[in-house]
Image 1 (tube, rainbow, N blue to C red):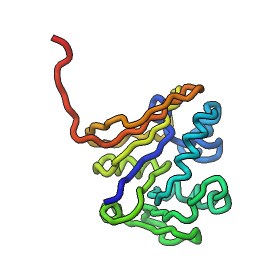
Image 2: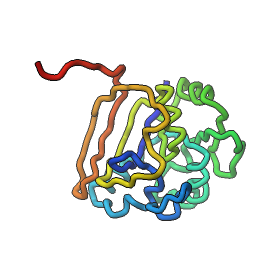
Image 3: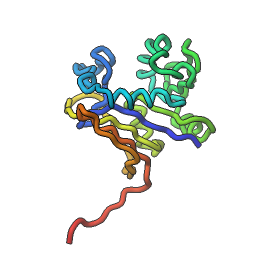
Length: 198
């Protein structure tokens, strides 16, 4: 069985839309694209570079894939392995791409079959609706979050549309000089409750 690892840059209120640039994703009238830029520092860059150098396959929503498809094939010098890793794309409309190692999936059942196969970890970047589908169906094994110290109010969010109650265990954390909390969590069973105090 393969691990599904969600890597996401989010705000304090959970917005994950267009962290990388003003034109990345303006859907819904989003006007804060590139909101991560002021928080880049040496520690942040080291974490990102380490993540980009990990051998992995990728599970993406169609919109994220189409953003990547137009950029990453010509920028693999920054992201070693992005062209060689298999890109699995959940889409009802796309069936093929000229970008090598791109495989299109049609359903949640296809994702479950992929997760139960042998191979490297599967990373999910961007893809808000896909992540929500995975969380709703308890298919996320690890969350790698970069929590930025700002609130945007509007935009696509990480935790929306009915994720199941689930507990996670913090396995690694760092706070960058610019105030970004980088936290890695493993899935840890059911939510436990109790009474606080006397």
